[in-house]
Image (tube, rainbow, N blue to C red; front, side):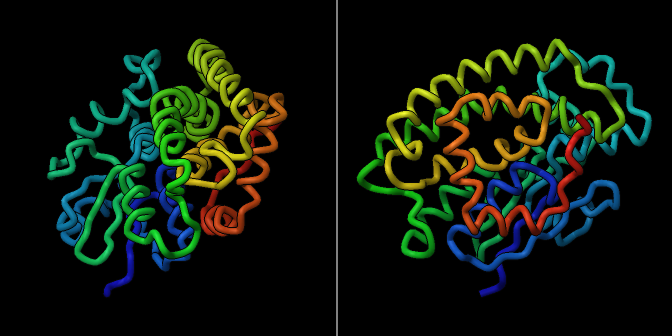
Length: 263
């Protein structure tokens, strides 16, 4: 079988999310960079995958470098940038959302990082770390939903404002930061209560629910809002536990992360 290929920008938290699960499973793969700035998205071999690049951080960096005026969008949520900007400026293929990552695994080509991770965890159930514990299936499903509906919508704008905008030479929008920091604090209060009674989100075993949080938690802890994690002892202990996993260390070591923000 051809080697697995993970397409995307290595700095994307969504690419990191998938790479983490691939490493937990002990699966060989290569990251194939998809760089808008070099026109990689127009190459026939990528177009043949029927996906479109890239994630909103790299789109915005490209647009900023080319003089795009962001003033109209500055009050909108980070996730609002992706579809209107990409869909308006990039050629359309069958991936309707214009996002990375994409995974090529033999004859299977998938997009959407959470769907990819579910596919990996199911297809390679007997390999590496068991990420779908049957004994905790109900809790697992709950916390997979909590991540996508409560954690991600608030952590993603914070990562954009506090990491991506400074990379673009811009300043964080304090209104957006305060709003989502306040909302994420309330979400993490729920985590704190839950983790006071459970070692991991789905119970006593590390699972896909934990893995799906890791890339954005990592980014959050590199921002001035790291206290959202550090000030909650059970959340902090959980994060330190999962961040110390060999698979995640391997993932992070392979990715050229931006330098931490100055104090």
